[in-house]
Image (cartoon, rainbow, N blue to C red; front, top):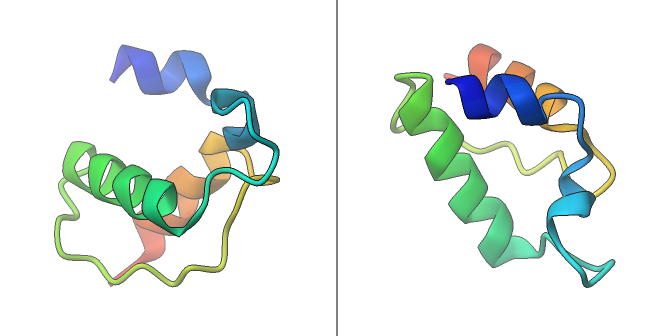
Length: 66
């Protein structure tokens, strides 16, 4: 959890050199990772987030996902 707190203010796009990333494969991987950490495994990914969103926004999307 400390890692997520540390990167919470970073934009997801900063994790990737390619400005078109994260693409669908990377978004799916990030979704699975964050849902596992937040004990929300199996939550539906709304796919309404992308490279311009901050990690903290992704965390909020996961927290409200069902």
